[in-house]
Picture (cartoon, rainbow, N blue to C red):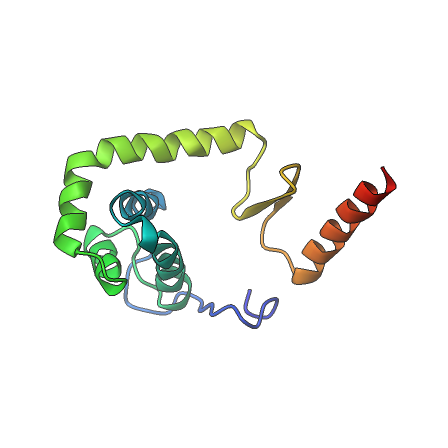
Length: 143
């Protein structure tokens, strides 16, 4: 990945930390931040990406997730209490959104939806996006 996008800070897993057991806890954590501190939602998104891809942290561990919330300015104790109280609700929301994506034919992560029409699956080089967007613009200008 780092060869395709030099700005990406990607490190192959090389720590003593266990790899995540799944992505559901991190997605729930993001939903909690979005619910409790909406102004910090993008910070949490980027913090999760950095924790996983650059720092090789176990983003399925609730203590790690609480630490990430704290690192962006959130209250980790409040975060954990919301998780305890509303975990099932957020779990159902994440699963529902996942199923909606599958029903729309999205099967890869990441998938970028260009112009609400064209799904571009998987990590792609920048040139791929430039080409697709150029084609859409050309077709729009022709009509």
